[in-house]
Image 1 (cartoon, helix red, strand yellow):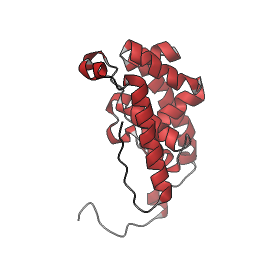
Image 2 (cartoon, one colour; image 1 turned 180 degrees about the vertical axis):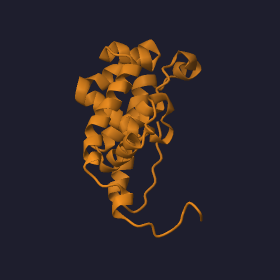
Image 3 (cartoon, helix red, strand yellow; image 1 turned 90 degrees about the vertical axis):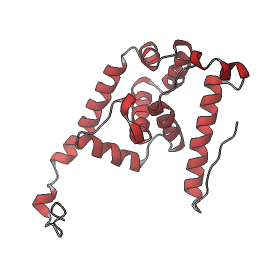
Length: 175
């Protein structure tokens, strides 16, 4: 296996990136191995979803929580643009990490490896989640979304809106 990482001059960022990429290497080696038969029979491989792959790598590299992920997911929750797991796109890193943290907190961290083991056998994330957690993917996402709303909405209710406390300096809608 080979990973490539860049160095921007920040050792903290480098350590995070290295941990993130090594997490991918370990997970993919565990899931698929390095044998030639794995490469030949790709149709029999578990398609690890992006939200889980990137979310787990971020969860692992960030010691299970990161202020930036929290900030992004809080904004997505408050402004109603949370995406379900299959449609997260770039939010797979942040929202995926928060969903992984939710699974670990609610069901136990050992369930993360169980999901991977079940996925390798069942070849479907939906079936792996159901087998490991006892809930459907849809229910898991619904419970996760509700938890986020319960966490973030009360603090927002106590705040003033921007229009109440600030004056626009530009006319960005017109300009």
